[in-house]
Amino acid sequence: MADDDLPRKTRLYGAMDVFAGPPTLADDDPFAVDETSAERAPVPLARYEIEDVLGRGGMGEVLSARDAQLGRHVAIKRLRVLDPSEAVVARFLREARIQGRLEHPAVVPVHELWHEPGGRPFFVMKQLAGLTLAEVLPRLAERDPAMLERFPPQRLLRAFADICLALEFAHTRGVVHRDLKPANIVVGEFGEVYVLDWGVARVSGSEDFDRASFADIESMDGTKAADTLAGVILGTPGYLSPEQIRGDRDLDGRADVYALGCILFELLALDGLHPRGHAAALSTALVGLDARPSVRAPDRGIPPELDAICVRATALDRADRYATARQLSDAIESYLDGNRDVALRKQLAAQELAAARAALAAGDDEDARRTAMRAAARALALDPTDREPADLVGALMLQAPRETPPEVERELEQLDLVALVSSARFGMLAAIAYLAFFPLLVWIGFREPWYLIAGPGISLLIIFATIYIAPRDPYLSGYIAIGGNAAMFALFAWMVSPVVIGPGPCILMITILVAHRRLIRPWLLATLTVLATLAPWVAQLAQGDLPITTTGTDIVLHTAASHLDPLATVVGLVIYLVALAALATLLSASQHDEQREVRRTLQLQSWQLRQLVPRVVSARSAG
Image 1 (cartoon, rainbow, N blue to C red):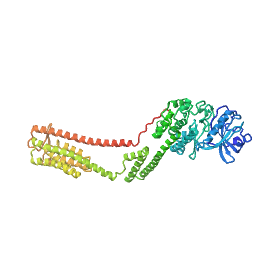
Image 2: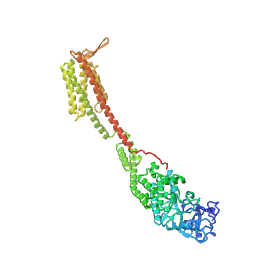
Image 3: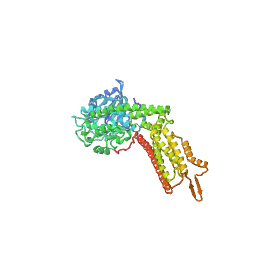
Image 4: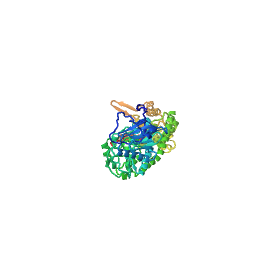
């Protein structure tokens, strides 16, 4: 089979490390398999049908192949150089043995290792199908719909907890990965996860492997090994622990815990904890950053529990971190156990919200709005962080229905009764003022017995109705007050003057009663006050008299008094005008206070509605 005819595989990974050093073979064709024909291949390699190159570097490459004996696809990792040095071969074999000894579901299993003196070693691994987190996270940040559906937050957190347990398994066997990053974590199609690239792992009690150098080698996700620093500092900037950067020799599993904390931050915020670039990443890792993903991504609704986990996992002092990767996994699992209830509440809230919208779509009558309001309120109670039920509750509360429900009409009637009783008290105050004026009228000169009896009698009737009838039957008391006030206006206008006395009390009565439309219609109230005002004019005209005449430049008002005392008349008029102004002021103040209380109640309700949807303050840390 010619190299050009080999099918190319995508999203199929085997674990691959990176080896520095100049290649000893030509590399003109990036997908050339480089003299790996059957006749040049070692005997064990002959059983594998090479199909494609998954990754290639200066000294190593990973091939996609088919195992002819078992009929399965595998990944083959081998050295590319024809005459590798003993040190290169030793490092290669060591990686294979470390990976092969870590028999864990999240570590790619090694099926076969071949090595003969003078030959190029290779080992055969399981070939993976899936995506690295380095491919998943950028597409989630771009809000790719397919990726959002495929990798919801809970799935990523469960995968992360499994990765932590895989690292804990390695740590208990004395192996520290030292190069954990999203590019080295694969999420499979069926929930499986894998940790790749154990090439720079440190094994306790083994020979010094720290000084291995690494060059520009393409990895399986397209990144370069140049992103992994050579020399004492091994790993990838942005995920290196402070002790790795300092070159501490006593590394333990907490170095991997730090890298896991950086990965968790990136899973939650969809942005790296440390800035891009080697120098910036290394410097910020040594001085520390705010490791709360909710601060970096305030719009993602990251809960404080996960903030606290990230902060602890990425503590500068390793003594302040989780002591083991298992503890980090347990923290995530504890959150997920509680979050499962949250997920159920969110699901129930979505159902209630759908029920509310369906009820509104069916109609806008009383039953539909009641059903919609109750369902939306339940949705809001189940998931207070969701804006949709909050907005729906607010809209239903602020937007009036087309028809007023009977229950609301009954409540309005009760409120009208309360307002009517309140107005009756003001009417009683006016009746007391009328009653107080009759002694003053007698002093002025009005001494006809019939109106001195009729006037106080009407005032006392209004007071009696307000005190004894209004609590039992406000409407009957209101009708008595309206009739009594109309009679009192007519009486005062007949006695004193329909021009001076009548209009003021009429205006006060209209101001009080015009708001009580259940008691009397405005047109009927206007008609009654007009009749009470005109009645004295008609009566005096019927007798051939006019209540008012003019003499040149003077207007003469005619009263029913037999003799007017000049001083008492002036004093009486002044007292009348002052009393009228005082009553008007009290009435206006009372109505203003009632209106302000209504506005205050509405503003409080509006404020409370706004609290249903808390404002999100966006703030992004520079990191």
